[in-house]
Amino acid sequence: MDLLSEASNGPRVLTARHISDIPPEINHPINTTLLCHTYSLQPDFASYTAVLKSNAYVIWSLGLLVVLIICVMYVVTLRSALRHWKDSKTSAAIVLAVYPLVASAAFLVTVVPRACILAEAIAQEAVMVAMYHFYFMVIAESGGVNQLVRRSEGSRLETRVLPCCCWPCCILPRPQVQKKSLTWLRYLVLQMPVIQAFIYVIILILWAEDMMLYLNSLIYIIPFVAASILSGVWGVIMCIKTAEAVGAKPKPRFLALQLVLIIVKLQWGITKMLPGMLKLPCHTALHPSVFVNLVQSIVMMLEMLLLSIWAYRLYSVPPGKDADRVQHIVVAVLEDSLSTSDKTKEDKS
Image 1 (cartoon, helix red, strand yellow):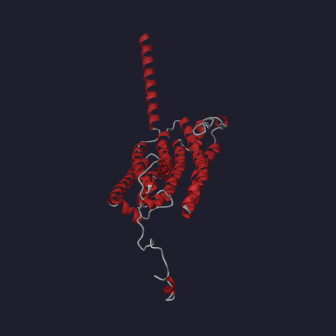
Image 2 (image 1 turned 30 degrees about the vertical axis):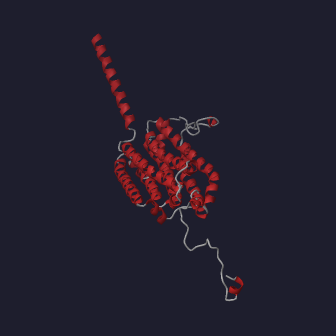
Image 3 (image 1 turned 120 degrees about the vertical axis):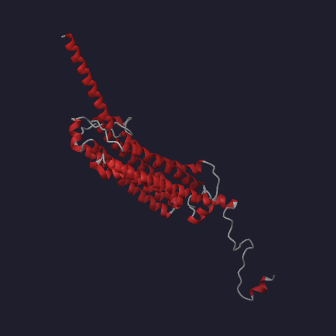
């Protein structure tokens, strides 16, 4: 073909022979190498379901069933708890709602992988708000602020507890248990939901702007997240120690809530690191980060189911029941010993 003679017939466009209108194969080894470990590649819903095929409907059906069971457990547990926590009904409802909320957020990730950061923000904020209302439940179990201060009889607040139990935190002062110190504890716990909500708004903005910008900014955000959570947990533990000094026993219920925090933060953080640590099978529509998030979400729903069952056992009994039982046993032993000593005196006389 003579290009010079052909050019006189009109404008023409020359293209390379390897360019074609047929789209390249998405799972070609070269495309997989370039795209599979790119964290900005989040599959859309159609591609995601096309890879999972019939497994998607099995996972969604079982996940929805688990979430519904947790919701039923929430209603049953709340009905039992309201009989014993009449002075803090709202706080009890919010604390117990953390299990279905976290399970629902995990179920959302199994359906829409691109909602992972949003689901993490929902679960995180649910735990933070539950922690704040758990503080009110501890105060109510102790008889209220005035009753707690009166029963403490000038004892000092135990500040050397986790996570501030080692040097240099050993030099922290120990103020007396007063209304002022309990108010500061309340503010220390209140900052958790406020600051965490503000931080996650920033995270969601960065994530919406650019995934790589979000990943590169995490190293600067994590210290603020950790400082806020650790200081808030420190305040809750100090409140629990003060309540235990007057006979309350909120520690088992706090452990059930603390496990949710560990699962949401620690387990989700490990999940983010696993794709770079493990050599997983690579598929562009279901690359390692999406696959790990799917498995982690399924595990999280099962964990919330177990914790909701445990919460039912904890909240279906009156608060401080074990402490009352111990007191009755002590009184019974003292009465028996006194009656025995009286009989001995009568026999001698």
